[in-house]
Image (cartoon, rainbow, N blue to C red):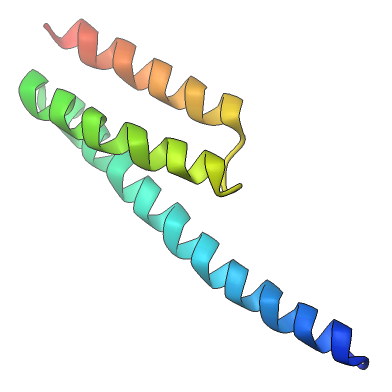
Length: 87
């Protein structure tokens, strides 16, 4: 349990950041799932559109500290190559 005013404030801040990061991570995963579903259905146009929507969201997660830069780059790269292979 936090005792000092500073540690109480820190606990509040941590809880707020946790909620924000959780929502952001969820939003990113939803975008990635949409790309996966479009790839699975074999629809190249839908997959390309979904990837275009997912990439900025993923990179925004990097700038906000939710994901590591290389993790996001790896995910985008793998999805892009799978979308390209659909054609």
